[in-house]
Amino acid sequence: MELDPDRCYDAFTAHDARFDGRVFVGVRSTGIYCRPVCRVRTPRRSVCTFYVSAAAAEAAGFRPCLRCRPELAPGLSAMDASATLAHAAAGLIDAHLADDLSVASLAGKVGITDRHLRRLFREHFGVAPADYLRTRRLLLAKRLLTDTGLPVTDVAAAAGFGSLRALEAAFQRHYRMVPSALRGPRRPGADDALHFTLSYRPPLDYARLVDFLAGRTIAGVEQVVDGEYRRSVRLDGVRGWLGVRPGKAALEVTLSASLAAAVPAALAGVRRLFDLDADPAAVTQALGPLAEARPGLRLPGAFDGIEMAVRAVLGQQITVKAARTLAGRFTAAFGTALDTPWAAVNTTFPTAERIAALSVSQIAELGVIRRRAEVIIALAAAVAEGRLMLSPGAPVQDTIAQLQALPGIGPWTAHYIAMRALAWPDAYPDGDYGVRAALGMCSAREARQQAEAWRPWRAYAVMHLWASLGEAEEATS
Image (tube, rainbow, N blue to C red; front, side):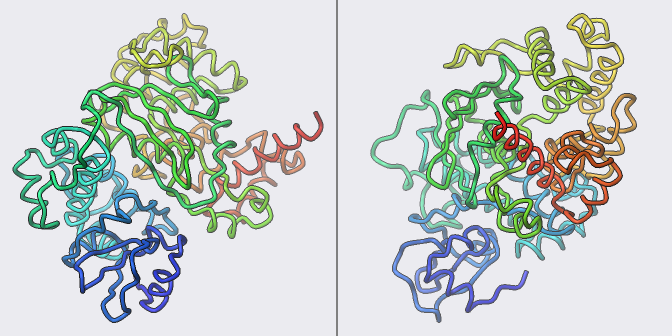
């Protein structure tokens, strides 16, 4: 990715938030790299160099600024096909920092060759995948050391270093400090909840987004109270809970202490669910008048792919309210009890393995028609066996084809799952009644023709059309 140094320096001197997360500034006189929004004294242009990612700045030998904290910069959305693959792989890295990752496994998950993945990382992030992984681990460790009271050994494990010695060696080599230097004089105990902020690129219509989620919460798993989204969490063999509230140009996230070992996956799940990496200006520009009245509208994602997909199947051809009822029964029957601070959030959704082991009659007893129960079991089996991935980074067209190959899943359901679980911005649930109603009750064919003008943001267009229906109902009530 080419950067215009003069434009980047202008953005740095103006503290232009539009460039935050897109450009990082290395200052050769200090050896430090910053975000464009950093409020330190502006250095001379002659000592500044500019990088497309934090990883590229660190690969050039710069250390992260302790004031603007590059680890808190907002993420990026993909703008074209190659960027989609690169960002999908980067997203997988961010969600699995504690795992034993390899270029081959990442390339396999996004459906490309190792060589192609390396080329894409060089093109979009300025570094090799291994360099990107190292930087993300270092920045996560830096964040955990700064923002939590977790023991340093737990920080090392959560950030994927494997041992305290490996973490200390990496900090000395790349940051020229010991990890404990980031610790303040007073920190909460290790048993306390963990608190984080997740930045985004404004505007964000949090109220509309959380209303969408509130209308589709699963009893026992999720709850929305006074604008706070709460849910149970099952990740990487650990369970716990989280809460999300709006803050200043960021979301305030609280995780239970039990999720300390799964912080990367938990935070990545929140980013997906609230679509925090979106570029609202790009969407509004592409959709034109359709999006101008709601510039901060986001595409709700999914914290748990199998949870979202099962709920989508349960909701086929019935109302949203009826689907919530069935999903609540399903969770109560097959989920696992969990203690949380909230009485209404008390169960984790069953795993794909648990669902795949159910019988059709067990699910049908809940009031689910047998054909739909068969689809749910087949869907869960495909996920449990690794044949189907329901998260961003999965090959979109192949995944949609796999979904539609299951009896009972048609184009609408497959695209709705792609829209939310895969976070695919161009998903289009063909024939959707709400879309057709918002367009004046045109035919499915006519709606499809109009939707061509919205590529590659058709999923966002669908959200705007659904939102316009709700506004029309409010205006006539």
